[in-house]
Figure 1: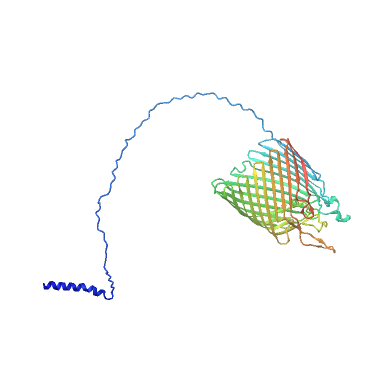
Figure 2: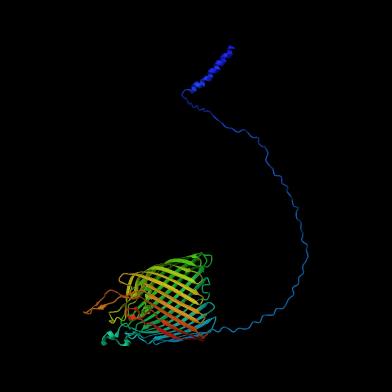
Length: 566
């Protein structure tokens, strides 16, 4: 009992403690328990066997077969085929002769004739004759009539091993030194017309041969012999004889096909000049040019050496020039580029210089023109089957380059030209684009740029920096042929002199010759397979421009006529 009371008293005491504690200020305590916790997964009960797919394999019995031999008899009836009857056709009748005659507004008769031997596999002969003259003059200038004459006979024979070629040429051209105005001169100073007339005559023979295979054999060879006489109306003559020979051997040492050529070119020339007042002179040139040429895939290589020996009345000299060229075909039959280096020696002869400028004086010194070293490069492109484009650029080191200046020493009327030789460098760039479509359309356009840097002369006299040209030929409706030609020459410069009161000559600033553009058009109508008519309009835009100083050309003129084939 006593014990129970004690428990009740204790229980009442503990029950009264919270009320006493709540009556006091609350106290907050935070207890952090730190300990290790390792989670784990109990082992699972795994199946200790792999799954297996039960499949049933069906086996095919082996195939057995046999061939039953049974002959098959087929009969083809034979019919007799009658040969087809072909109507005989006559051999084509080619026109062997061609005649073209006309007359122009400048009182200009014109005639041209071609004749040929009938068709033959072994022989061929032909004749070409041409005459053109102008009887009209140029206003305010001295007599300026001219004439051009040509006779050319040629032949060819094909043998078993050799092919022979022959040609005989005769030319006779007449013109006048009309580069002065008689009305501005006293009568005592006006020369007679006969003294201003110049006649250039030439007679030339060429004969040669080459092997009949002509590049199809392993060894190919040939030679050409030429000789001739050239002279003018004032007893200046030039005799020229020469020979050109070549031989090459074709192998496949480097290329898969026979594109390797090992060869040698030989060139010999001899000149004998006789003048009326100057002493006679003789000169010769011999050149040996061994080379190797190959084409390997898209690459082309040419390696040669030009050894040239020249002799004249002064001395004898030997020159060695490289002749190396490399080409790369970037796109087959479409785009090709090339670069190279070369050198050469040529003769400034009476024939070559008077052909460039027929108004050159009767006598002048001659020498050899040397191109010591020329670097060049370019591209060839074919933009489709009908369109092509070529471009090139080069730089040359020249010696004895000939330029024409008005002669004041022996011709005070300034109506003839003397020669000024100089050395220097030349940079030349040229581009040309052409379009051809069978025989119906032919169009070509081109431009050329020349930049001289000379040692002595101020300008390259009478040589333009920029030239351009264009030609067109089109056949319309198989009846009408349209032709055109265009030429543009930029400014040129002439070296002029002025006579002072004391009789001496002074040289002022160079005279600038104006640029010019010359356009000509031509029409031809085919009446039938034998007759046609033509009409040419010349110098539509050029006017009386001066190609050479003090020598204006003819202005607009018309030439018309007919052609006959038989």
